[in-house]
Image 1 (cartoon, rainbow, N blue to C red):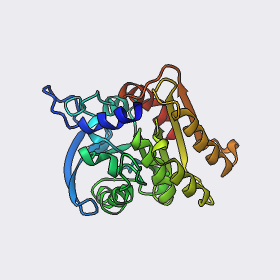
Image 2 (image 1 turned 135 degrees about the vertical axis):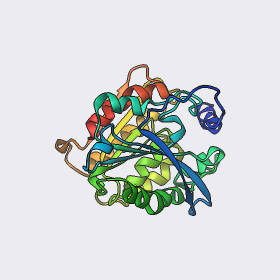
Image 3 (image 1 turned 90 degrees about the vertical axis):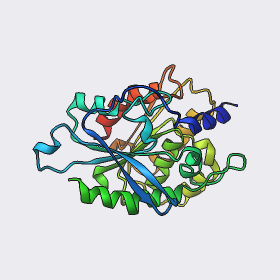
Image 4 (image 1 turned 60 degrees about the horizontal axis):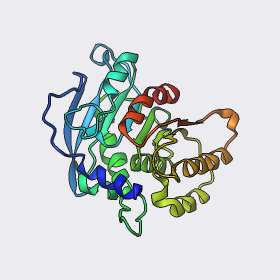
Length: 266
């Protein structure tokens, strides 16, 4: 039942909210055609406070569910406060928020179809990010385009697709923020893919709460973390696992832990 409610609630993220925008002045948006998805996508862009005053280049974080990152007006269940958090740190990073597909969200963020919930179109979604969005971002902004300076991050199904992106495009994404990942959705297929992966060098921050309402979330995440550890020496400290006592599957958990995840990853 928890999984049904989890997937259903995300389908209502586009719900209109009557209130003033809370996005900072460093946040802008543009719309980009996504031929891989046969649609267009609204993209949010966060630039560091000193971006216009410098000539330096910056690492980039690509984040899913862009509606929920910066602005309470578009975040039906509360925003992540990404802009306020990064401003408080004087963070030297660009964030690209990608609009989720509404009723197509499950399809876009899942690499394999589920026998009950469908899905399985993540290859098209990631193809859009890697081949259409990232080249535009790298051309329009002063980015550090290499993998070691490119992160992909998300929660729930966004955590699942972020880890999948690291497996499929290790030459593109060198860092991953994997929050409350829904590995249950594609457990067997993901295990098969991991078994076929010889090396894994990506830096990963794993996060979940111990009160997410799904008994599988912690063992699933720990199983993936264990696999990561089999691919390299733990002494390299390229992955971190955090389980928050009392943490639930919601924006509050992700918002409150984003700062520590960012500081560890970068």
